[in-house]
Length: 264
Image (tube, rainbow, N blue to C red; front, side, top):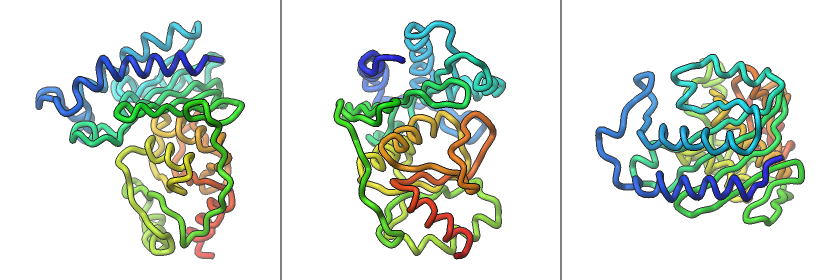
């Protein structure tokens, strides 16, 4: 496996040399929209290219899937079915926050092989927080994180995707929102995953699932003792087209949320 300190150095240097100098200093001509909808900056693209360059040096014969690369070539998702290791990256998760000089954004990296997540990493450029997960658990600044506290629905704080649900599911979600203590979104799912692992939030109820948005954080929460499942109660299937996922600090909370969705 890859040494986490090598990844930390890569992310720190990319942040220092590319991201931070542009934070609060973006020019209008550096910002555009891909697919006419999603905001992207020249920094996103530059960071992704540098990640590809640096990560490819750590392991031989690896594939690379990046958010910005995918927008030009969706066929790269076929790499998940190969026998090679595959890097998955989100160069800036929370691009809108980054553009608006808000600190909740992150660089996310995942390493997978076939249908298994092996290691993942999230780095927050402003605070320089670095969290990673591997077969031994989830760690922040080399301190192991373990989620132990059970959360009741009425005390749960988290986020619910606002778009991309079926009409039936959208109605169900509208009905259950008031059962939770608080529903809000950071505008960066990576930062939310980090706070779930730290015990500062409890859950995320998600519709559309792009792998770069969720591989890193799902594994970080999972290895800290949390739980992830689709509405069929099977674990996150990043390697195939899938939607509708609930991630939280425990299996019990996930199943309670799914029971609410089922009207029980």
